[in-house]
Image 1: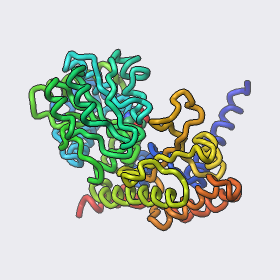
Image 2: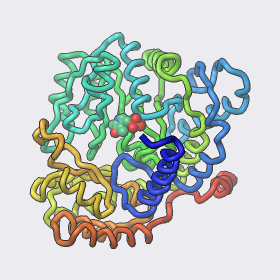
Image 3: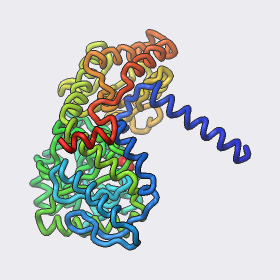
Image 4: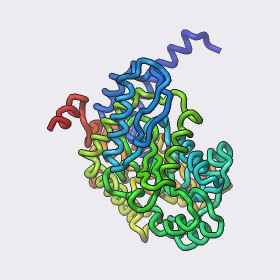
Length: 444
Ligand SMILES: *Cc1c(COP(=O)(O)O)cnc(C)c1O
């Protein structure tokens, strides 16, 4: 092995290379990666002391700091409260918890809290193969860490959605304590309204995992889960929501059952699953909330428009985009069935060689044993949209993708055009360029 000074030389050099490569030279179509504005980045840079502090303790029913165990927190407690209020204000909720360090952490605390509140260890989830996140599944967090039993929603492969009638029947006969919606391959709003009655009949809590679509919800361009009947939303703050990496849980606890759930969820945050809550990200998260208040609607609308434009254009040009009969998508994502051109693994690699970054993805009707070369690709448009691309630019990007997919030009040839396109769209739009600009808007 190399000695430590040489390891550090390599570490610093590869870090610089990464920043140059992914930030300056590649076009990012990974559906789970957000794009922070200069103001959010600047705020993160201004909070290095905060990022070294601890704030363990309890919160009250508004989600505000109630009790902390260490001294020196007169400002950090206020920062937590202000950030909580920013989230509550943006999403019009009466309670939020922003202490979660990731979406998986938010799910951990929520699933545990709801299992405690319902005294029921059964949770209805979308099958993993149909877009659920691994944290929902019995093979992941839900089953292997929390010991929850999964019941599967019945998924309609033609509609790329949960089948409401059949799933209502499953819920009524199996009586889970938690019913989850939301997912990682997530093209169309899930049937919360349609399943609300069945959940109520068996006293199940409804949890909606908005990790992927939180920014679209903030912009009013996707279903509004709490208004449709969900009890709690869990999410990452860094996918379509363009904040720092972290997690959030929110709700409107207006019944004794939901108030009880809030207490159990808070208990599951601290002391059960959090010690450091990574305070340094909180002011930046607040700034991102304000950006979404001001720019969220136009940003989210353009993201969805760009995804649909790409769906139509790729489809017209012979690439099988799934769910054609439904307009391809209502979110930021598309799913492509790329078998005809060699499968998800081969094409994702060839696109990477052309500096177009996305991921292979298993499709609901895929051979579930062939995870290495699934039929699908998942394509997300939140990053390129925030860089300012509109429909015409998206079609040009699709042309570059199809050159690779169809083998018309080599990846190396396409890469030159991809890098030029990235340079043209290097700014971050729909956000503040500095903390000062955020202040200016706040004083308006
Ligand atoms: C990404 C994702 C998560 C996990 O979020 P992290 O912030 O990466 O921990 C949870 N649920 C869904 C549906 C996701 O897509």
